[in-house]
Image (tube, rainbow, N blue to C red):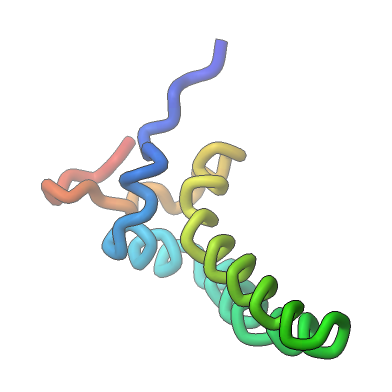
Length: 91
């Protein structure tokens, strides 16, 4: 039986949760910055303007959803750095 993740999808979309997540996972934050900035250029070279628009949408969606997906997939290390909106540390 699997435990229910403590981070709901709507909670993961808040700027505070994303900031806390990316501060706890610095290498993942650097990777996401590279993806967000380089994916539109890849879209430009492969599909032109439509590729740029699609890749911007995909990269922003990935940046926003990564904290939720990481929680669901089991990134547990450094969770003590993630705090709820009341200031309590999540377990």
